[in-house]
Length: 61
Figure 1 (cartoon, rainbow, N blue to C red):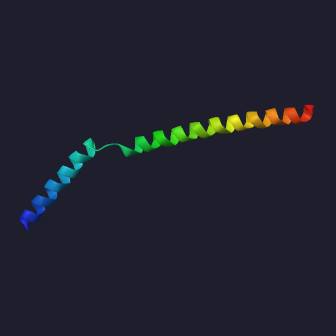
Figure 2: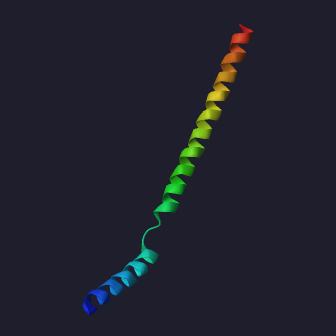
Figure 3: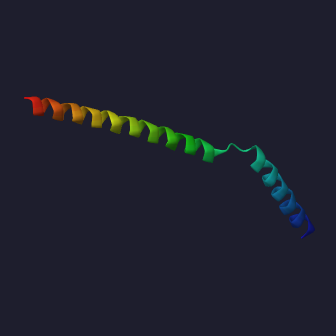
């Protein structure tokens, strides 16, 4: 029983220490989402500009 408690305490301490050195996936995902958002906003702006250009050409002709 004592051995089990010691093993659990040591594994808890080991996992706690590991958590400080583990790679931070949250910031990586946040950066990826931010990049996707920026790209989508650029594409939307380009599409709006093209639509505006096409509407102006249709109004002239």
